Structure formats: C-alpha cells, structure tokens
Amino acid sequence: MTTENEHNCIDKDDLLNDTKLNIDKFGLQVILVGSTSYCPSFAYSIGLTQTYNHPEIICFGLPNDLGHAIINDIAEIIQKGETIDTRKIYTEIFKNSRAAFLKVDQRNMDDYFGAAFNYYGDKRFEALQLVWTDRNDKLPWENDFEEAFLYKQPLLDRNADFKFYEPKNLATFTTRQWLDEKKPILLVVHDFDGDWQFLTGDQLPEDIKIVALEQLIKQDSTLNEVFDLEYGEEAEREFIGGEWTRNKVEMDNEE
Image (cartoon, rainbow, N blue to C red; front, side, top):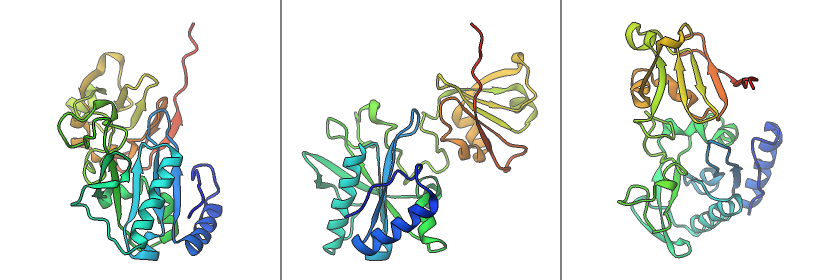
C-alpha cells in the first residue's frame, strides 16, 4: 500500500514527489524514522486526512517493518468506513495484545510530522497515536507497566509542557547564575553519558548546581525545543527565544 522512506536520508523534494505518487496510488504514504542512540523510532502516515478525512496515525518504538505493516492495517480499517475511536481498546491490531489510540496534542505535532507538514502546507490536520502494551499486556498509564518500555513511546496527548523523555525529577546540571541571578540558559549539552547541562555561558566550575529537570522547564519552556538532542550533542543560542544552533560535542583527547 505504500513504499518505505527513511525521511532523514532522502531529499525533501524527492520525498514530497514520492508521497504525492503513493497517496494518488494507495491513499497514503508511510514515513519511517529509525531510532538513534537517544530517540525512539517512529512511523506515521500521510494522506489519511486527504483520502478518508481521517486523522493521520503515528506509532513509536516498533521495528520499521512492523510499524509500516501496522499503519497499513489501520488504513485498511479506515478504508472500510470505520473511524478510529480513542475511547476503545482494540484487540485485533496486535496478535495477543491490546492497543489504544490517543489524540495528539497539536503542540507536539511539529516535533514528529515534518514530512506531513511539507505535504499539507497550510492545511491543518490532526493525528492519533497508536499505543501498544508491555509484555504483560499493560498500557503505559496502567499500574505496573514495565519501566523498561516507559520512554520508548512518548505519549503525545500530553507532555507538551515537558517534552523530554526522562523523568521530571531527573538531576541535571545548571549554574548559580541561573538560580540566583536569573540569567538565561544559552547553552544546553547532552553528554555522552546521558547527563544534561543547562548553562548560562559565564559559569566557573564552582558555579555548577544540581536541579530537577522539571524546574528548568517550568521556568523556561523554550528549553523544550532541544528535548531531542542526541548523546554528545549541544545547542547554543544568543537569547531566550532565539534560534538554536546544534553541534557535536568535542571529545576530550586526554589520555
């Protein structure tokens, strides 16, 4: 029903042309984005809005071939005239396990639907997130959901005010200048070992302080813009609200 595309590895115009051809032929295009050392894999549809007047579908944390097949299966359900119901638990999508759907908060759309925005342009569209269960058939919001799977599928109906994959109480590094003098965070570093640094740029080693990640985000929501920094990547800006410039962190050459 579609062709697969790793949209980080294909020219934007070529992807747009492929998308148009596949939507004309099959009714939708499936975009596959592989996982990285930090970010989970995800797959999403383009074309369900245009073809069936139905929200697009996105799912996280599945192998590419499975994510591709599952979205096609859901498209066939929609094609038969059924509207996906966010109040319903589905038992026919996965073998021997349940699934549910969440309405994606519009504030989370830009982070994941880049190729869809490229296709639809100014036309507004909505999306639903397919959510799968753990090995005990528990959904993420149910008691005893396995912690190992907790951050493999961020729940996009919520968390628009805190987009990071880690727990809100994660200990992070910042500066005395941010805490005491209210200076802005101008440099964010995601260390190779997973630690986060939120720096003002004028700090000395003795100025480093530890605070919960949520404390930083509550005081400066624009830090959410760099939630997806890879391990060993940093982002710098000149002022709050300014454009972030991302770079690889230089490794120390010390023996």
